Image (cartoon, rainbow, N blue to C red; front, side):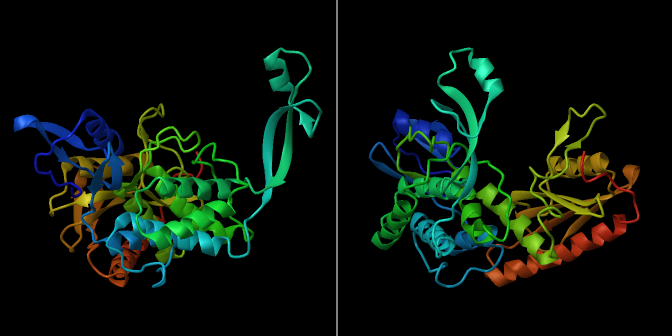
Length: 395
């Protein structure tokens, strides 16, 4: 099967239908003769379900997918070694993640202090009075909070979660499997992840871990399995191409504009945006530029093709951003479509809505050239709005 392309009628059992719907977000419809037609969306990868190999291939070439993944993680063009040609997505992803993990641990596995809450028979650190009262039980064991210095820090737990995803993936290249197995052994002392959305503060001490950690986040984002308990052992690797593309665009623009994470934050870290006066209609723009304490640019990323006449709902979304932020311009970036940008002027609110489309079939340097041009557009938008007071960067 191929991304966004209906399959020919297939014979599927209940387990396979449920897996395709849940993990790959596929539309599965009955066809004549007791068969089923499957229409994948933007999740790609491979799995083995009920003894049958299932594969959803990306529309992009494998090396382009690896480029998007690598740049989203590293913020720079990967070298030839980590982007070696691969005809198999799972093996290519496994090799790339192994390379990033090997670089991160070149000087050893990072250790550090972490906060621990536990029930002990002796006091360590300080007593957690709130927890002790809540338990309403005898004094022993005691609820305590203390700091532990070991390797089970969030960075290592995320890398271990990424390795766990790949351990369950149908990878058939021995050299890649051996590298991943060596890395899992390296993290043997690391406790399993208790959550994968933990915020990490990057410093000179842990900065070398960042590319591997950012890729681990993308790997884990595509999974619905419980990585901590190991509940579902179906061999699978699922990538959400929408998430990969959005992260790539944000990171590439941030690098092109030479901005920090605070100046060009992720959608989760950006200032809260609401459309109504009660703060109930929450908006989450993918792209935000903050300068001098005020929001100066707002944008959205869509992993889909725009044939040149974007859906009205996409335009309405941009218009809502301008109304909510007080900015006069908003930009939408598509994954494909005509190269010439489009601008819509909305007279009633004096807003300009800009549509840009990337050509991801171009070589990596060509894609980054397109990103640079969009970066220049963003600077121009920010400059035009810089005379406005704007909205505060913090709610």
